[in-house]
Length: 341
Ligand code: SF4
Image (cartoon, rainbow, N blue to C red; front, side, top):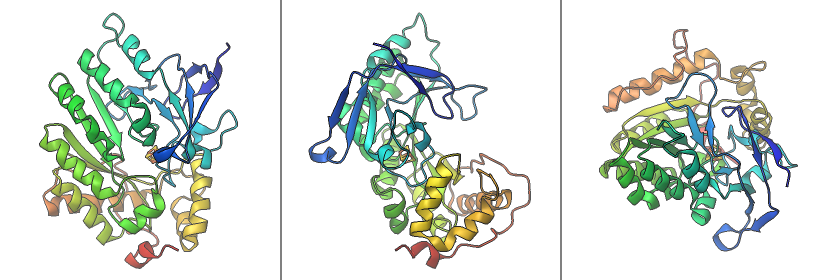
């Protein structure tokens, strides 16, 4: 059976050939509303092109699409193939690489593999709902235990705690860390922007539990949404929660609007917060994918100051924009952040 060409996402430049076997599984019970499209991947470990930018060069994504349904998700364009769209289809039609564990075992055999760190969660959440059914992430971690291979995980789900036993085994043999993406602990914002994810405080509690078990765990405040989750009170509450949980690092990333995602997010904004459209026009002017440098510098300073004030770890400054920090063009207010329809 011929393979379908499947271009991978922005940080996965090569192509994989996949061989769909016609298996479309309709979710039932707790998986109602989801469809699982089971495929066999020809390869599962992806090499990120260029020098490592985030401390890893190899990734595994056992799923495509994500039932966490984040409005701003940068990975949505990965679903733009085979007639699947980047909106509802991305949220509900989840591609499952059902042979991920077998492939990982084969591709990490000592004869072929140098033992580099493998990152999970770079293009889809490895602990989204599908993982409850397929347990592929758990199987992948078991392979990493067999190989004593270092791993990093980025997730928005406390489901990772299910695999504490495997993570502890891995931590005794290799470096492992689990980071949680927590853009904000503001419940009103969470409900409208990440409707399929566990409550942000469940993630914060997971950070504490993992660190208590000896598994390094940090927080990535990502993305911070201008005018929605960046008021002084919201930033303070989120940094404070991360610090109190003992996060080994607290990074942050402002909203990034890449091709495809930009139109989807602006549509979402128009229906939820039309009052913010002019502000976003300013901050993401032209074809800009990133918020303007003044905003990024301002945000970095707010979070850095909070970490210092609250006794947190050294701030991570992923972008280090050059201009001196200045207030954003339209300073957000608390009222704006709570004013969802
Ligand atoms: S959890 Fe990550 S991959 Fe999933 S929808 Fe949200 S941003 Fe996208």
